[in-house]
Amino acid sequence: MIDYKTIQNIVLAGTLAASGCYVDHSHYSYTGKIGEDVVQFDETWGLMNANILTVIKSDGNRIKYVDCLDEDLKLEVIEIIPYNGNESKQESQKEVLEQAQREFDHYLEAILQSKQSQ
Image (tube, rainbow, N blue to C red; front, side, top):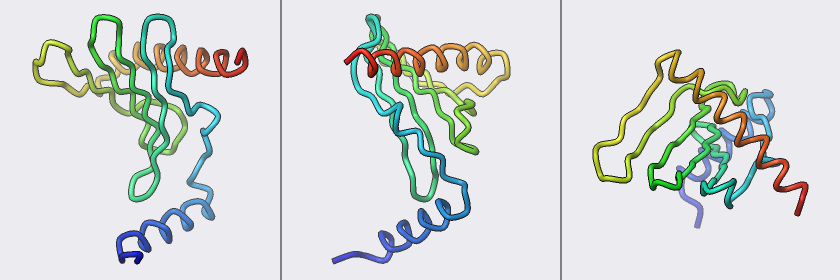
């Protein structure tokens, strides 16, 4: 049985797709290793469309790169989750995002290269 929330999400997704707001980035869908880092790229859709790249660094720290506006693969925020259990922090300062954008772009390129070589 489909509930009201599911129907609402289906209708919303259809409306967004029809209006041109949804951009398909499924060619980046990936879970695997890039160098020593474990990398996962996901697209989410529904009430909030987002592209999320999660990277677990070799030291255990985790970084989430989030593109949640316009689906243009330009970061709006990153979340840094330390391995040592300290509280995570979100960054949206221009300087931090500029460096993170370069890292994000590097991972996306590496994902495509990895998928082509398979």
